[in-house]
Every structure is written in C-alpha cells, then in structure tokens.
Image (cartoon, rainbow, N blue to C red):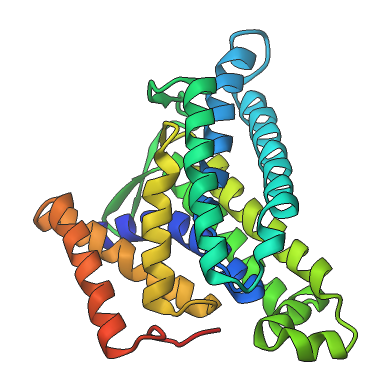
Length: 287
C-alpha cells in the first residue's frame, strides 16, 4: 500500500506535466522541448518571492499564494512570447519546432542561471503532520498536493471531453483543415491550447513548490519523464498521457524501493524502446 501511495504522489505531477505536452502536440503537431522551462520559472520565482514575503508580516500561506500567482502569470507571459515569436511560425513542422524549442530551452536555462543563480533552493513546509491511509503513511502536505493535482487533471479531462473549447481542440487535433472549413478559428484554438498546456506546467510547479528543490535545470528532468510518458501512452492522446505517467510513476516507486533510481531510469528507457518497437504509435495510439 505504501508503494501505491508513493506512486500516486509521483504520478499526480507527471500527469499534469505530460497532459500539457500531449495537448501541444495534438493541436499544433509539435513537441515543445521548452515546456520544462514553464515548470522551472514558477519554482524559481517562488524561491525568491516566498521567503521575501514571509520575512515580513505576511503569513506563509499568503506568501505561497502570492508567489504562486506571480509565478503562473510570468510563465503565461513567457509562453505567450514564445508562441508569438517562435512556435507560431513552426506549427505542424516537427523539424523546425524541434530546433527552435531546443534552442529556446537552452537559452532560457542560461537566462535562469544568470538571473536566479545555480544554488538549489528549498522552500519551508506549508503544512505539517502525517496521516495513515490503509497502513500507508503520507505527509499531510503531500496528500493535499496529490489531491489538488489530480483534481486539476480531472478538470482538464472534463474540459477536453465536454466543453465547447475542448470539442474545438479535439476537432483541430483530428483534422485542422476540416475544422477550419467548419468555422473553427484554428489559430485562436491553437493559442488557447498552448496557454492551457503552459498553465498546467506552471500549476504543477506551484503545487510541488513546498516539496521540490528548485534549480534552473529542474524542468529538464520533468521534460524527459513527461516525454517518455506521452511516447509510451501515445503522442496526442490524453488517456495515453495519463497511462504513461502512471507507468513511469510505478517504475520509479518500485525501482527506487527494490533497487535504486538508476535502475528505475534504465527501466523507463527500456520500456520506451520496447513500446516503440512493438507499437510505434504508443499503447493507446495517437490522439
């Protein structure tokens, strides 16, 4: 039961991150390798603002809230600039978007390093205490984070499945030319999908900020795992991103418990290669 609980904690963050990656691929047909920096920026911003605000008379929870709002706002602004001046020009161009997004990722990592420094930063705990759930122990803080992340993921899935925007996103993902002939504004829908994906990465970072050590390159770790998750589940598939994230989380939890993190990472890559050989479109196929 403890391993299941650990896997759920890990999967909650990976699901949010991979949902953003697969949404961008589904709508724009690109893989955004700068997506990890949308996770990094809120953590770095909160690493500066939360201690500063908490050092005054402001309560710790309010400091987290204000720092989180500022981090998400700046990330959305960064995402808008990247979309407007870079990725918008390379929609449905896998090669061009790959080169541009990799270059942007390296550029942003350098800017973050110069702006925030390279020393890892850990924020103070927001909630104290431990709870026992069916014999498995989990800190109250991690339980709240997991529940909030899963709630955001469920809301995201409902939006894609039932809302007017979600139906437009699915139509564009299936056939953007046919969607445009039906009156769906492709560019506006692509922009909306990109902002939703950006906000998912930023929200994941804000939720994980009390338990994560921030650094200018932390987004790269999540990018690798998120990319593995969507490749395993199926590029562009929302259920596939969730399934892939769960598999990666289970491998990390079991591998870290019975062996060591190195073997867990090797197993992830081995599973990715096996899936690509047996089912190149992923377990659930392309969305």
